[in-house]
Image (cartoon, rainbow, N blue to C red; front, side, top):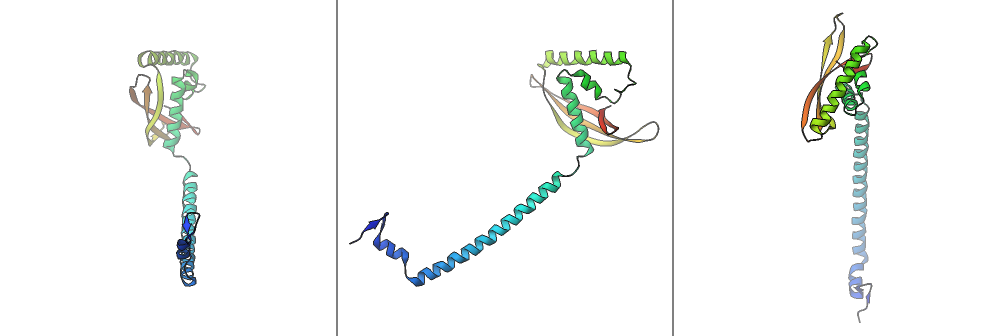
Length: 179
């Protein structure tokens, strides 16, 4: 009589259990598999540690002049399209205490008109994206070398048109400003 327990008949259980010699061979295979598994696990862990270490060291490098100037230019243009014209003017290289008050007022009026025109003609500005940046050196009148970067931005308008612009940036006192 063949009885079935858990879906496996007694005859099948006998075949699966096998002799002690077969179990010994099977046990050897299992121990070899465990050793292989452990070796693979060690290799995976070492590779993971290498990748994490590589990632951490690459992330800790200082940003380049192109990256810093690009982020500054994008930030200034975001101020402009948000109607924050004062902050945009502060991003200009000539926006220091020597800028005459009447000239500053003319700039404020002109930039406000520009933003109003972009809103009217292009349904506003949807996004400002960094496309590229090229670093160079600018020689001042007194002969000093100034870091200089041309930042290429894409202005994405609300009517799905795009415009590429070049924003010349110069570093003054550790800050990137629009030239």
